[in-house]
Length: 68
Image (cartoon, rainbow, N blue to C red):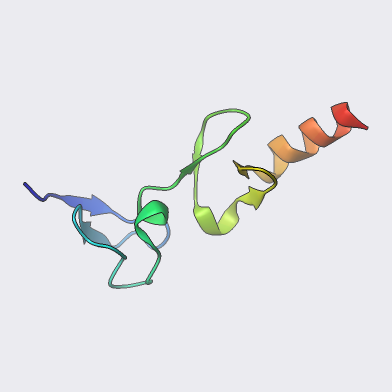
C-alpha cells in the first residue's frame, strides 16, 4: 500500500510508489536521501560528494586527509 513520504530534496509530499518527485523531479533514490558511506548519516543527494559512494563533504575531507 502506498503512503506519503517527504522528499529529502524539496520537502514536498511524494507517494512511496513514485519514480520521481513531482515538484523537484529528483529520482526515487534522492526522495529518501542517500546514506553517507563514512558516518552512515542521511543527506540530500544534491549535497553529497560522490567519491566511490555518497559522502558528506566534511566526511570526505576527513577521509582524504588520512589517505594522503
